[in-house]
Each structure stands twice: as structure tokens, then as C-alpha cells.
Length: 505
Ligand code: SF4
Image 1: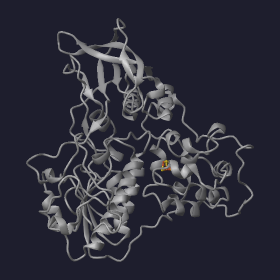
Image 2 (image 1 turned 180 degrees about the vertical axis):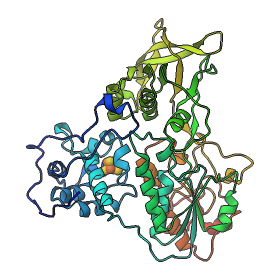
Image 3 (image 1 turned 135 degrees about the horizontal axis):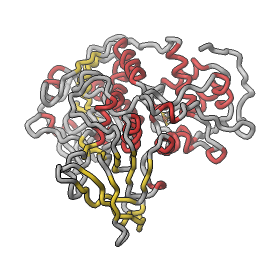
Image 4 (image 1 turned 45 degrees about the horizontal axis):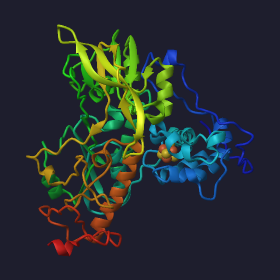
């Protein structure tokens, strides 16, 4: 790659003259034969042209649409002038993985969905963000920031996007950071959950390497709550961040759910996508009729992974319609192109099996949408007399995830959770245990990578405030806050109704 430094400052606001371009995508027939990423980079001329479509709004809706508040118009303006390195530098100020988020964000619901020229074809923000950062990484100009150590240590539990973002932010502030990861490789969900056709493993490993160069220490194969306790971490560190995700799969609650051939989607994805053996029982889909239950991004990933593993037929059964399906439209379109079939407004009511106890079919009922529920989405209701049978050799359940409950015998159980099992945090991401912070799916339930990055950044800022305020009076590890309590060490911005540290002593 080269960098053209010739500015073309007049090349702006060209959305009327230039149509939106998409990044090159490999043909479906080719890409289903491997697990490599399906999109390649835009070329430099196209990046400049596409960036020049930006209106440079005074109050950019795309920035509001990006959970990280990325400074999108600024880097689009620089990219339009061919100043790719400067553009990448700005994009790094608000994102800890600006080469990863654009690969996995559902842009149509975030930055690009908010773009003011959406109806004429949004600026291709994600493809440009990916390009400028790959450009900088290819030239080796993404510096590992190594600040002066401040003498304090933080333990980060989990090396998914929240943990990596938190570690990166703390490291830049001079904290000594150790990441504890239960798997034998760092990366968490990025490595084991997201298929390589969306995010190549090397991209994750490269980001982990940058953190290692910054001095972040990784302890892999260590499960906090089993191999080491929360109190041990607090004794050896000034603060702890929990970024352990939500890995408990929601169950399929219909007769026949215990038949052979019925699997949860996440272990299937992990087994087929992990770069190392996870010791999971093998799931063989080759030549089989696979039915995926659910309509989120995990369901899309299951369909597309099953296709690449040689399934004879892949059908997604989802109880709502396409308009109400939570999965990314981009990934839905890709799944369709690759041969997946979709049955909307279809709900399983039972699984049938043969004498050997193997699943043979899904008994389904047609659904219709009724009144909106609490979430505002119209509630699906069964249509009387519409039952039908869908033949199947293998079922993958992709109904979403909950946080894994903290084991009662573990000191992690000191951390308060809400009725859905999500870890409770205050506005600074601190949990009920002083000095213990949390973010990402363990707090929110299953959500986007970009949300985990946001939480990791917020938690790092909260940890910094906490440790700055109580540099010499760290709270004892034994102190546990009651529900609704927080700590006044969060300088200035703690909610008015919280009890102060002084009050709870
Ligand atoms: Fe868009 Fe995601 Fe990048 Fe934000 S992080 S600008 S939402 S692609």
C-alpha cells in the first residue's frame, strides 16, 4: 500500500454525483469452500471517492449512531484527501480495535443507519474504517503505547473485546495489567465465537500482539472462580475487571429436545471455528439436513458454518418475520447467497425422533404477529391448525445466551446480579464489590462487540477514577455493597442517592 499525500480538499459532499460502493465480496460458490473472510478491502481510489460522499454534517448523526462515538466525519474527511494514516490515528482515539469493529458491526443499525444520506446510499463508513486501519497496520505505524508505569496493578478477567479494550485503556494510563483467560489462547468471543469468514483469526492475534508489546501480561488456561479466587485477585491487584461474557445457552423447551442430534449453537460454532481443539464432542453435519432455531447473528453464523461443513440443507426457523429478526441484514443476505433457507413466522412445538433416539423432524406451527410486547416488537402468536413437519437430521439451537451464574461456592458470588443473572454495575461499571468492575455481555446479556468495547473503555475510566481517588485508602476486599449502594470515590459524578464510602464503613 502507498499513501498519496496529495490533498483533494474540494472532494466533499459528493453523494449526489457518486453512488455508494460496497467492498469486493467473494462469490458464494467460492467462499463456502473455506472459512476465510468474504470481504476484501476497497482500493485506495475508491476509498477516497467514497469518503468524499460525506456531507460533513455539523451535528453528525453517524457519530451519535456509533456506540463509541467514533469521530467519523473527521476521518472520512482525511480519507477523502488520501491522508489514510492521519485518518487511522484519529479513529484509534475512540476505538481500541478499529480494524475489528467494522468487520463485525451491523452498520445498518448503527453508524450507517443514522447517516443523513441513508436513502441515497449511506457513506460506507465500516468499509472505510477497516481500510484506513488495515493501511496503518500494514505499514507498521500503529504504535504500541508504552507509558511510564504508575505502580498500580489491575486484573482483567476474560480476553474478549471488553477485556482487551479495558486492558488497552489501563495500559495507556500506566497500569500494570494482567489478563486471566480460561481458554489456552486469548481472544475470547472474537476468537472462539465469531467465524473466521467474518473475522480472520490472524486479525485477532495481531491485536493481542499489540497489547503484549504494550506490556499487558496474559495468563491463559486460568479460570477465575476455580483456579484462582476473586479475593486472591483483589489481594494481588488494586482493581479487577470482569469481562467474562454470557456463555450459558438458552434452552429449547419442547418435547424431544433431549433427542440425539440436538445441539446448542455456541459449542458448535466454537468447535468448528476455534484455532485449537477445545475438547468438545464432535458435531458432524456433513450430508445432513440441518435446522437452525433462532433469528440472531448466532443463527446466521450457525447456518453459514454448517454450509461450509457440508450440510445437505440448512433451514432457519424463526418465530417472527424478517422485519423483526434481530440478526444483521448483511449477514442474512450473505447466508441467503450461500444457500441457507429461511422460514419466518415458524415456531417449533416438538421434535420427533426414531427408535434409535435420533431426531428426524421438527414439528412446527405457523405464527402471526399480534400486538407489540414490552420491547415494542409485535408478539408472535400461533395460528390455529397450522402445524406442519420439517424433516431434520440435526438441530442447532441459537436462542441466545445468559451470563453463566457465579458458582455459589466461589467468592465471585459476592458480586450482585440482577434477576436475569446480569452483573449489576453503577454508572462507572463498578459492581457491588468495591474495586471490582464489569462490562460487556456479563452485564448486558448478549450484545455487540462494539458495546463490549464501550464498556471496557468506561470501566477503565471508572477504575482510574477509583484508584486515583483512593490511592492510599483502598477499600478492604471484604467490603460488599448492598444493592443500590455505590461508592463516593467516583469523583463528582456518582448519583445523588448513593451511599458514600464513609457511610458504609
Ligand atoms: Fe460504525 Fe461500528 Fe465503526 Fe462505530 S465501530 S463507526 S458503529 S462500524
